[in-house]
Image (cartoon, rainbow, N blue to C red; front, side, top):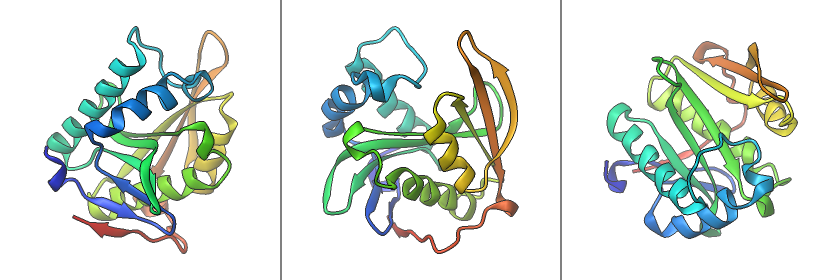
Length: 186
């Protein structure tokens, strides 16, 4: 799907916009090559640039197949890459999973909660998604806190070599957008 057909979401401080080839260097170096950022992301035998290219392709392909997919997270004042958020199929199921991450210099500012809330609201209200799942490694307590704030419930756990993989879910009827908003820009 071309970027003109992927909607942008604007929140108080952030812009969730279509991913572009120009995002690839920051996506590779500040996201996938940063061990602190990438420590909770599934490991793949790819270089950081190959991972960024794959993330861009998956985001676009999911939009083309499902009318929902991935965005780049940027600050409204400076639309440079801060992170990414994806809503994509969960493994080989019909369920959709939301995944997200920010570069380390964007941590601790509430951006993750703001971005995830906007994406979840769009998924439920704009794309008609009935339910979302999120998987989190138990050591990633910051991500679990974001999901808790947004009303996700811990549904189940699976053992990992080190720790547990937590499955959180949220159904449309239980989502309370609160005072959140997003401005849809097509």
